[in-house]
Structures are given as structure tokens and as C-alpha cells.
Length: 375
Ligand SMILES: [Zn+2]
Image (cartoon, rainbow, N blue to C red):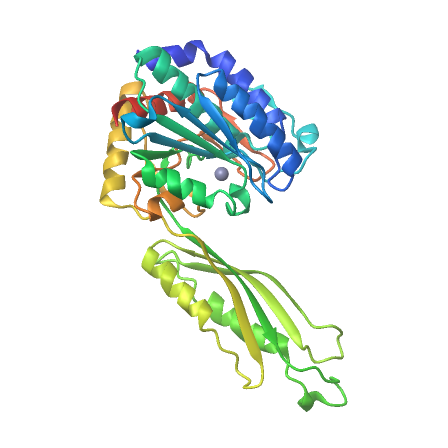
């Protein structure tokens, strides 16, 4: 058996105990106090693995953590990336406690992506203790991915620019790596009409809701399951009373696309929306939050290498397209060699049945360690 895998199998109970600690410390994206506490916990934890941990203060988000190993001057580092915030509110752990039964571990944020973080740290440990490889590594754990990475974006892009390769520890797609991800745009549309009495002066008004209704249909018309582009108006509002022609309406829109050109095309569509009535007005705010991660030739090569390593470790690795974006998209968009979805095997991200498969934990950590050893 692979030396690294044996080491990790032997430490499986310790990995699971770490996982319990990570999951039981709750980290909702919006709770700075809990996030900052976790950042300190993570920095201390990383130090036990010989890492030089820094806490990077953030305003409006939890603090981020950056850990380095090896000699920084001896070449570009392998960049491990994962977020430690979750979508779950404080107290969820009471209803959804950490538990392991029948080979499945559950708990809030376990799949997305505390298990990926634990696997990443253990991969570093295995690399250093088993192979003696001491190449430079940097591991960033950011606090705000689930809300669009507003305060960690620049940090991630800078590290990606300096990196040899980026390994993103986001959850897998049923075990598959994510060699492509859709990009995501978020927009808020505001339409201004003119109010009037719906009974006494219907012609004096301009209905912002009617205008918005046309815009919604127009936008949803851009959904194309062939190309993979989707538009979803997820929130709408407007008007004041049933007998008043609505002066205002708003909508919140999610746009996803597989290619950069398609993402840019949709951005232009949103920017040039027109209302029908010449006296009505439309304003659009927002834009592309994460550009698509396309399956480039370089990424296909990286995947082929990972697939070989997985076969040596003893499992079959596949690849897929993810409908959701991640910080991996930021790294890929600046041209850094990036492999995403290296984290947990399981399911139920953001859902009540969130879980990971325990037997996969040492194997996935071994794959990350072997990538760090061989890339
Ligand atoms: Zn995630």
C-alpha cells in the first residue's frame, strides 16, 4: 500500500476527532465573533503541524488565515485553498449534531467544507512526515466564500498569481473533481414607473410591475440548457397597494454560464435592459461575482495526473462540471493552474442531510499529499 495512504489510515481516528472539533465550532458567514474565534483556533491548529500561521484581519467578514510551510524563497508554493465559513446559523449543531454511523459522518458544514480543510491539513502532515518533502506550501482558509468572498478576493488572487498550482479543497461532485465550473453573476434590477389611482386615473400611471414582468420573461428567455446558461429571477417586489398603479418594482437575478464569452454576453444583456414605456426607467446594479472556470487543456492535464495518482492510491477518479462557483474560479480566471473539488466525498451541501463518507477521508487526503509531492 502507498506509504502516505498507510500513514493516513493509521491516523484515521485522529482525523475524525479533528473533524468533530472543526464541525462543532460553528462558523456562520455572518457572525464575525464566531469566525474570528475559529480563525484563532485554526492558526493554533496549523502551528501543531509545523505551519507558520498568520491571522489576516478583515473588516466586515471574519478574519482570514494564511499558513506557510517550507522555505518561501525556494520557488512558487503549492497553494491549498478552502473556506471555513458555512451557510448554517449558530445553534444548528444542536439540531444537527456531529455524528458518525454506518460509515457516514454528519453535521453542519461538514461537506462544504470542514472535511476538506481537515483533509488538507492532514495531507500536509503526511507529505512532511512520510515523504520528507519540504517544498513551499501556502494554505489560505477564508471566512467569506459563502457570501461571495468580498474581503478575501484580493488575497486569493495574489496567492494564486504567485502559486505553482492551486489545489482547491471544495467538496467533490460525488467523488469527481470539478474541472469546470459555471460562473455566477448577481444583479439587482430596479424599475421606476409613475403612481396613480388604479380606478380613477389608470391612464395617468406607469406600472413598474408591468414593466418588470416583461423584463422577467425576457431574462428567463435567455436560459438555454444546450449552452448551460441559466437565468433565475429569484426575488421580486414592488408596489404599495392593490388599487395603486405601482411606481416601483425590483428583482434580484442569478445568471450562470459555462464559458467566459457567454458570461460576458449575459453581462452585456443585463447592462442594456430596456423598459417599454418611454417614461419608465430601469437601473441595473451588480455583475459577475465569479467568472466561469473553463476546462482548459492545462486543467485536463492536471486532472489526468490526479487520476493516475488516485489509481495508485486505489480509487477511480472522475471529473465533472459544477453548476456552482467557488474561489477556484478566481484562481483559474487569473490563469493559475487550478484543480477544484479535491475535498470531501459526500453530499447535501447547504441541506439538512449534509454528510461525508468516512472511508474516503484518508484516500482523498492521500491524493492531495501525492499531488503536492509530484507536481
Ligand atoms: Zn464551499
